Picture 1 (cartoon, rainbow, N blue to C red):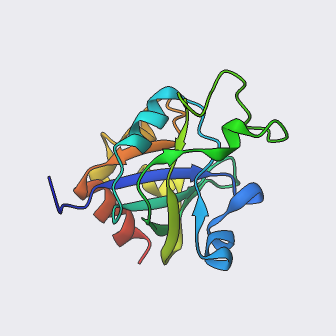
Picture 2: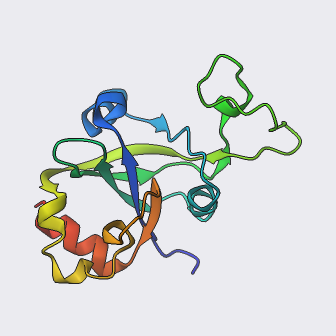
Amino acid sequence: MVGLVAYWLMKSEPDVFGYEDLVRVKREGWDGVRNYQARNFIRQMSKGDLAIFYHSNATPPGAAGICRIVSRPEPDPTQFDPTSKYYDPKSTAAEPRWDWVVVAPKKRLNFVPLDTLREIPELVDCRLLAKGNRLSVMPLTDAEFDAIVDAGS
């Protein structure tokens, strides 16, 4: 798959860090992922991949924009900072547990609320819509990514 772009969905709470914050700062490390499955998805990311920036725990939740992965996965520095809410005392520099990637804004979407996403046929099997799914980072198929982008264009 060398040279191919993979697609992802990355969730953030807009009152903590929303798509407009990413536009303002231009680049930001996607920190604080503390779920092993989501961390493993981060470890699969490549520079140049694209992600839907999804506002979670919002009223309503939904897709707000597209971001580009602009770094390779690397250890999330917040795991080593005792003053960070993401500090992990069991993680060491020699054996870090948690990774991040740096993201940059690519395109604002016309906000696509979750209720609208549920109505898109291409998303019927999407992990985002699976009952009980709370992952903050997940892969999307080409068709899922394209359907979300089309809905927000």
